Image (cartoon, rainbow, N blue to C red):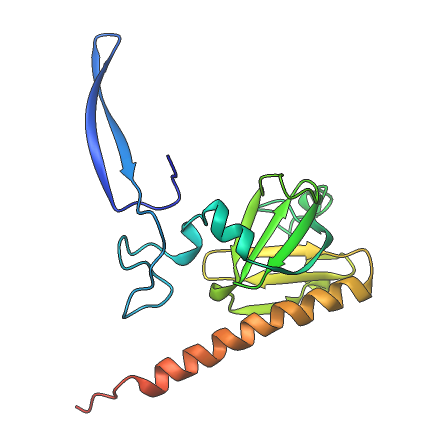
Length: 188
């Protein structure tokens, strides 16, 4: 069962070793359908677009537009703490898809299940992170939920990624401006 999206939750009681316990089961919606009021949320379950897993058929139709090996900073790394700054970055193969999903995996084989993904439709900024991380050729991808730090082997690689990622940030900024300008202003 996909745990990526849920229409509703069902509670069931099961007996384990003589004790009753409550088990939460999630019923999933099958496909993301944009909500009329918020295009980034599903009309069926109101979960964000990134929480919906694409079917195998949909994933085969989506084209990758950029890919390369990058290093990913460990999650929760505190760059202000000098002891944590020395933690090893993880080398991952990153793939940017045309629908705005950035995935990273252990290798570049198509059959490899991605270890994580970032919905670039939620990206609010892409910034140079060399000063923050103390590492050369680093970027920070900022979303409302997280900050993802990536590092390239060379300036050319990280500049290429920066160009690709900034396109999505600019699209998101245009959408926000359009929403603000189209929302009615209430007078008091």
